[in-house]
Every structure is written in structure tokens, then in C-alpha cells.
Amino acid sequence: DNHKRNSAAVNSIRIMEGISAVILAGGRARRFGGTDKTNIIIEGKTIFERITSVIEGLFGEIIVVSNNPESFVSDSRFRTASDHFSGFGPLAGIHSGLKSCTGTAAFVFAGDMPFLSREIIMEMISVFETSDKSILVPMMRGNSEPLHAIYSCSLAGNIERFIAEGRSNAVRDFFENENFAYFNVSETDENRLAFTNINSPDDLKGTNR
Image (cartoon, rainbow, N blue to C red; front, side, top):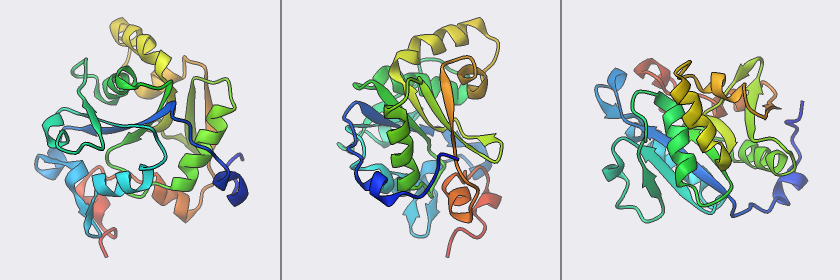
């Protein structure tokens, strides 16, 4: 298990400008009555505010990929991008983010993960920077999370070819054919919370206090 609490190592990490953050804000969620999930309020803050409060200061740039980029262009802290391919879900969002990055890699975050762990993020960056892999995907108890993962920006062309082949829209099907590694995360209540997605109103139960 390469996810061990090591405060000294985490605090010594120097975040490289070459890694960008990409937030997949998507579009309007049907299960939330057409509301953009990033605008859902949990404990007094929107999911988007919760995400950015964790990742700001860790990355040289933050790119928001959205089908409604006008919702974010007024904030100078972020750059915006839209999908180049329609109907391909998060895979198209990752592609757009990689195409928009000025650095060499992107840490991709789903826009519906309100409880991100800064410590896990920094540990993943440290592992990625010292590996020869193009993709680093967290894995907890047999479940991978490709929308909380680091991707080399050089993969944009590979995604284009994968989409052109028309075999699958699944991000997992893409990365399993690339030079990737898993980042094993121990299963604790804290870590499960860090990877929680808000997919439906039911997922909000117990989050607002």
C-alpha cells in the first residue's frame, strides 16, 4: 500500500508548475433538475468552492472544462474549455483539459467530489513525478477512480484515436491500454469521503450539517 501517512514527505513536496488542475464541471445534471452539480451547496459552500479551496495553491493553473463555460469566465483564477467531442462524457472532458494545459500533465478532478483530500492529492503528485507512467489512477479496495487521476498531456492524441475507433466511451477502457499505474489508497472513513461523488439527491443525505 503506497498510501501511508507521512507528513514529513508531504510537507517537503514542491509542486511543479508543469502540472495543471482540470475540473470536469460538465453540464446540467438531469437528476438535480437541470442544476449544474458544481453549484450544489454543501455545508454552506458550493461543490465548486469546496474543490477549489483544496486545490488552489497546488497547481500553476486551474482549467474548468464545462459545457457552460460562461458560468466561470468571470473568475480570473481559472481558464475555461469546452469539449471538442460531444457525446463522449468524461473522456471528452479529459481530452479537452489535456489540450488546454500549458504544462506537461494534468490532475483531473470530477466536478462532483466535494470532500477532496489535499494530502492524497500531494502524495499522488509526488508518486507521479518520480515514475515513468503516463497515468496515475487511485485504487481503493478494487475500485479505481479515473476522475481523480493524473494524466500526461501528451495523451490527448491517444484519446482522439481511441474515440475515433469508436470502441468505448469509458475512461477505464482508455487508460487500461496506456502506460498507467494504480495508486493504492487504504480504505478508511476519511479516504472514502475524499472519493465521494454526488451523483443524485440521495447522495446529499448526511452531508449537510
